Structure formats: C-alpha cells, structure tokens
Length: 166
Image 1 (cartoon, rainbow, N blue to C red):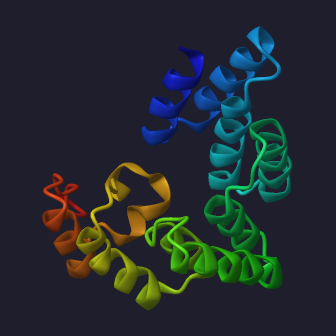
Image 2: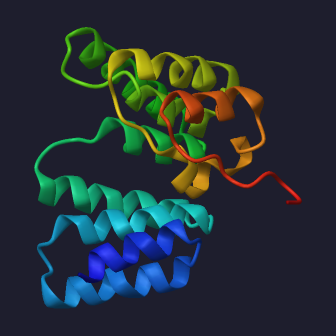
Image 3: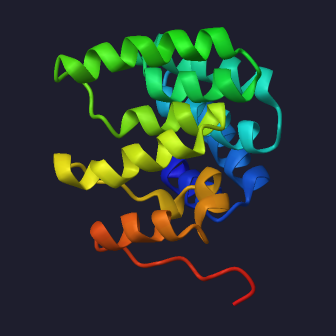
C-alpha cells in the first residue's frame, strides 16, 4: 500500500512524500524491490542522480534481472552517455528478438535528450499494440504541448494534459 501511494505521489510531483512512502515500505519489508525503484524515480526528478542510480541498482539486484530502459534513462540523465548507449544497444537487440517492447526505447532517448527519435518511437508505438501513459509521468511533462506528442496520446485514446497556461 505504501508503494502504491508513493507512485501516486510521484505522479503528482510530490517527490518528498513519495520518498517517505518508499522508505516506510522498506521499513516494513527491506527485501521489497519496488521500494527501491520508487526511491530512484523521485530522486532522479530532484537531481539526485547518483542516489537514483544506487537505488535502482538495488532494485535490479532484488528483482533479479535488469530493466534496461530505466537504467539507461538514469545513466543518460547522470551524464553517463556511453553506459546509456550500451543499454540502448542491448535493448534494441531485445526488441529485435521480440523480448522487449519497442516503446521501452523511448525512455532512454528521453534521458539522452533525443526528442526526434523519442517522438518517432512514440508515434509508432500504438501500431505495435503496446500500452503507454506518458502524460502521467513527470519526465514527459515538457512534451505536453508538443503537437506530435498530443497526437500520440489521441492514438492511445488517452486524455490530453492541460495546455500550458490553461
């Protein structure tokens, strides 16, 4: 319950409260991987990128397998471009093999600041039958007024975020 509440708080941009809920969940169960991801995401939004990477590494350790799309995103934000590009290359192989969804590539391009490639991936995403709710994620907020991004949301039959200044 604390983890679920934490994710809602994260989506509402209340990062400190989200972190508090993740910490409370860890007090109850130190082996619950999701709490570490919940610590990583708001820490990244607050600019605490090394802490975010550490928490996410702990998540992956407890979870038992890598989550390349989010690790690559964090590495890109932290200025570890070479590492992010390695995650991207590995993820592209997994997508080609049908082991990962193409939309996962978007998050790494988001971290790399590659707006054009990110939008290309999102525009094709609906064609591959995946689900995506980027308007809920704080890291996609800068795209809310982009006409291409808004068309992606429409293709997914998702509500449009309010326009800036509305």
